[in-house]
Image 1 (tube, one colour):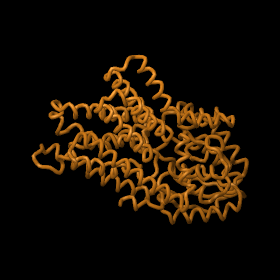
Image 2 (tube, rainbow, N blue to C red):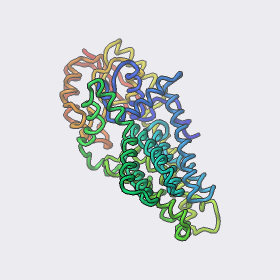
Image 3 (cartoon, rainbow, N blue to C red):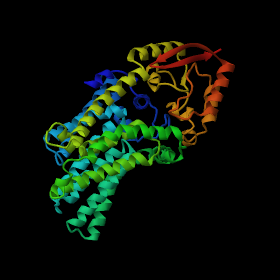
Image 4 (cartoon, rainbow, N blue to C red):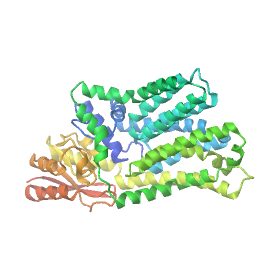
Length: 473
């Protein structure tokens, strides 16, 4: 119900806007990583390409598919939580997942919305394999698990940490059921191959058109070349830590911890699920940028591990700390998700503002090119004008962090763009946000070109942001 606040709005989040833009340009012949650049896996863009190809409004299509994906993940969370808690706690864990995902800006179309069901299902299959400890079926079960991880990797590479943990747990299980070392080695090779197969297939497709370097740089090299953005990233980590603290409180006050010491099945379940959660936390921490949606993969394992406390929230006879930790998580998830979604509308704008802005820019562009130095990628798709750069995601040219990590000199790229005389140039009227450290060099080049060759003719308002529009003198 909460997601009705955003349904049909093209301005939910800059990332989702960009994924749909890539799909749209791909449908018109632009190749991801070559003609329009980003470092997300091809599978994510392929998913949005599918949404774009379906009948109807592609915005509504991807959002409804995101809601369905969230519901599917919640059902898997419930199934996992049943291993730790009674039915009421398991259902509440699924409900918390649905409510908490929007609190981390994963309401509709962020990548964790689509890869969490795959990873959670892999965790469920892994847990079942450990419970059965069946040597005869382990190779097949492990193959299914690692293929799910491979599909998840093509939506978000951060799933590699959860995949590594599950792979190691599969090998430990193989050792437990008595596999000799040669068989373990063979199984490890097969499972690794299956996990890598979707990515290798994507690489092979680019190699076939002589674009191996473009694929490898965008998918693997570029992320290592980003610069740390210092204080803003630490502020984001502090904010996310506060947002995740209700989960931590529930897990710390788990009312069934003592009982599990004499219940081998629950002890096993908690260990397997705890290792999955720990791997997800490691994947979140290691990249160091800590944007809000990076916490999305943590919500599924943390909701599962919180299930015992959630069960106690609606049951008497438990210590008050345990009861209130579960109630606090329920309230925080619902309120946090609602507040963040309402904030998205306030900050990013409404569908009406989007349509007004695209109509205004489309009229001004008159068949020429349109360049956003900063703004909302959704406008590119709505205006349907030529984009004078392959770096259509604004952060790639207007932030310091991305400067050395895009495979081109951003200053030279902005100089080239402005020399091509785009018909409309859009730039924010606000001071650079604390969220990202600005690229002052590219901004200086832009402002000099605007002062010399352009005249301001209007502005568009999207949420609480105002953008000035310029055209050639």
